[in-house]
Length: 314
Ligand code: SER
Image (tube, rainbow, N blue to C red):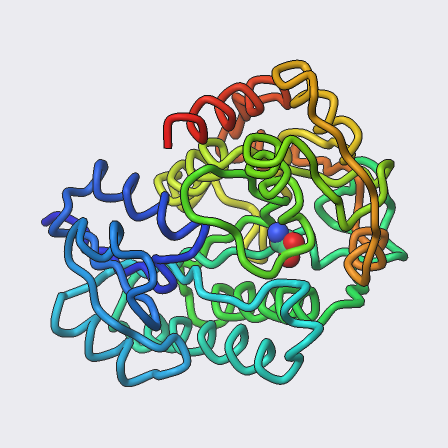
């Protein structure tokens, strides 16, 4: 029997491209996309779609039963910058949606879960370079706290109840389809749009702020490969470190300037600088590389080429 999948938060930056990829792999009708509203009409019209509030347990459960769903990808979340503005909302959405899907797996309604964590689980006391898989995690953002606690619950549900939950600590994700919303790493997407539109960009992080980043195609590849990996190969049931590239705003500016010589940048760090400063600049993902053969494809210049080519064609 073919697998039936539900994606919660399918209209978001990652959900949009994950839905497309999962439909290629499993067939359009086997992938139910859902979101709290229909903000992304291309996605909504691309196959089965349902309006689901990730905080509503019964809505998720009914959808799973009606469509005989066996796997949920829970992509809905309030990210780091928005979470600082709405702390209780971030806690409510990020934690309760996770409990809902964990409990659906615990009670046998579904079999498998993908839940993204983030580099935001790390904090100022974490080793900053080549951050190990197992290390100090004292996050200073609400978003980071929800992801760190969520990781503990994932591992707990796996150990105590045998729930097959899999997770990745995504770095900043750069893509040209749906815009990111409310993250500290969003500058690395905005900069491409502004370089093409206005030939200038004012960056909300300072020029030497190095952060772990990844092109969307690599993030989607990692997600589908982790979900396809044999369960007994996986040694991490909290969340895997995952790394591709690290760069600063100045690095990405220079990579774009090679294509658009008149492009200029200025720096006006805001409250997001403190968040960025609390995160690592590079990640050791050797456990993911060993357990399920993770490898990234895109470096900074390959990503810049893809971003500019695709955005120009829009
Ligand atoms: N991109 C996210 C953020 O900036 C990190 O997971 O909040």
